[in-house]
Amino acid sequence: MAAAVVFMSPWITRRTWLATVIVIAVAMITDAFDGYLARRWRVTSEAGYVLDAMGDRSIHLALILVVFVHYQVNAVLIWLLVLRDIAIYAVRVLTRDWLARSRELQWLSRFHATNLRIWLASYYLRDGIRVFTGRDPLDVFWFECTQTLLVAFTIVLSYYGLTRSLGWITDDQV
Image 1 (cartoon, rainbow, N blue to C red):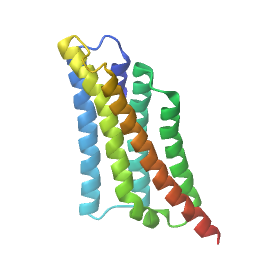
Image 2 (tube, rainbow, N blue to C red):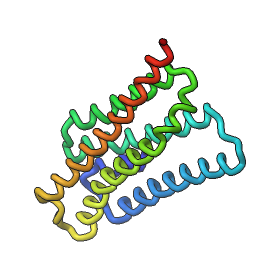
Image 3 (cartoon, rainbow, N blue to C red):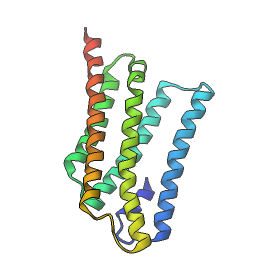
Image 4 (tube, helix red, strand yellow):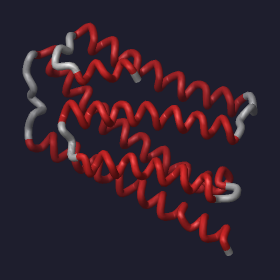
């Protein structure tokens, strides 16, 4: 997460940009690898699932905040992304057997995470182009529209999944 702070700096160099991208890539690869190993060796647990998700969320949150500060993204979009994660954890606390139930929405959660990562990567790609070329060819209307549509789609997906999972709480009340 500390490597993401480099992007907040107006003094990004080629070396710091490459180092930061490498750190983020290694974090993503090791995250995927540890989950694969846990499933393969059949040492998965509810606690491991929660801890892995918390690690993912902390990295996403750090990168989202960097994008918010560095690119002045609308605070409402950032708040909607953060609020969704808070609500997901509330559902987990209030729902019996949430892990088994969450499997039906796992595809949606992965799709949301992939879209969010693509949205974040578009900003870091833009920084990389600026660092290596000395100009910002992506500072154009169509690119900002694409980024806005991507994050809006990501938010709609995530709230669709959230509304589906909110029903689990009421099911447990009955």
